[in-house]
Amino acid sequence: MTPVYDTDPRDPDEAALFDLADGVRRLIDTTVRTHADADRLKRAADLVREATELIDVARRPDDDWDVRRYNAISGGANPIAIPLLPTVTGQDLRADMTFGRAYEGPPGYVHGGMLAAVLDQILGHANGAAGTPGMTARLTVSYRRPTPLDVPLVVHARNDGCEGRKIYASGRIEVDGKTTVEAEGLFIAPTHIQQYESFHGALSEADGLPRRD
Image (cartoon, rainbow, N blue to C red):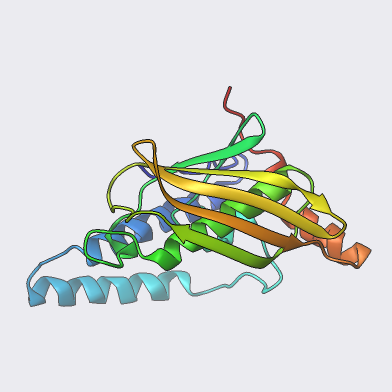
């Protein structure tokens, strides 16, 4: 189960970019699973190099920061992303996802660092959806049981309120209704007004997340 962002039908370049990222994402997953012979692996490596040269003709500016496209956890155009696509359910955010073999830590289970990264990201989305985006200051992660690979997971998060510039959020990851990982986060809102406006604008996607009734 891999959630995919809808692309803007008015932007064929975005559709092509997302399609490319999804193809590379499948390539990554296949690479860590394959047991093909050396000849096939060498041919595949040549094709990958050829594809890299094909698209390495123009690069986006360094300040082109779009969480929806390029974020390492949730970006639809980033092939190392899951990608994570939350929907709003009442006061909570929810995302359905599956970790493939590329995210393996212990045999058969998800790497704990990836679980922490996903929780950090969805807690940030919850804050953005509440209109109070901020930068992570502290993330406390509690691992309750191993999280398996290749099975559907549900990620939950919610904004728990603010105290001045301090923003609080919490979340969890479930498999078959059982919590495998929990997290509590402290986030800090930027101080400078231009900094805040720029940051909030970058996270504006969270304000328009799909709503699940």
